[in-house]
Length: 407
Image (cartoon, rainbow, N blue to C red):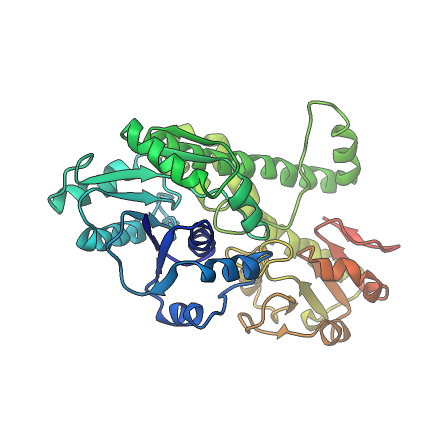
């Protein structure tokens, strides 16, 4: 079977490599010519645990990278799905463009699998009409499937091989066929359902996580207001056999948790009051951290923002993914105060993406008196002694210092 994977970003590339590793003929397609050229030179486009080995295994088999769509038996569409910040609805323009391009080249009988996260009903409202406009009969000429991705940066390769998957299809036979295909790359359970249910499951999974994160974040605000240690309270509460409170943090980043739940809010505005409030709590955290930092600066007579640095630019630890990063959100909030931008350092970000960005930990620390730990990279955990003489605001509860400020 020949598979054409559309979109070679954080999800599409490892997916293409995993199918190639497991014996499928794979062509990866992306409009970004520079990205395609890099892959054809045998170089990866982002860092990820286990990706070098996976890339090497895939290259031993039948895989190619191009900007052109291919005639294939199966298409896997893995392109971004942002949301409109005003309507809160999913912006499916990239999915529609990819489907239109596939329909220009695909032979009859092809299976089009959308892995991109979409709101419930998107396949019905946006994808089916495109297929019909091209003169294809769905279920005969073209088979539509939704198989939402379920992997996380930092552990992508392992999760591709072990996580369960959901296959949404119109037809039970096609659903089982696609389930068998995915069963070749994962040892996890592969379940089949209808397309709309599959769309809903992915959005619900990330909404569940967002709401639980918001509870922890709101709890830290309550405890700070009344002088209590939120981490001590969470530790004690979690001793209860049916309680598992998450730790608070400086915000929520990545493409999934801060984005996907808004799809439900956009489509069901009168039915998602709890979700809406939870998302607003999470969105408030970078500004909360900034205000907390200003309080600590005043307490320690630090009047110049040039003496304050943010450790961490990525949205989570030990990855180079900075999409929707809390640090970037914080820096945006800081602009409204017309203050000098804080200094920033992250060992995983090689290019300059913000002002006052450093690429050497020691130089970064030498130029500041106060550091805000935004990301718990292993590097800072291993070098905690370097912070002994610094004023530290630890948003991740990882600092092992005699004196440290917490959220």
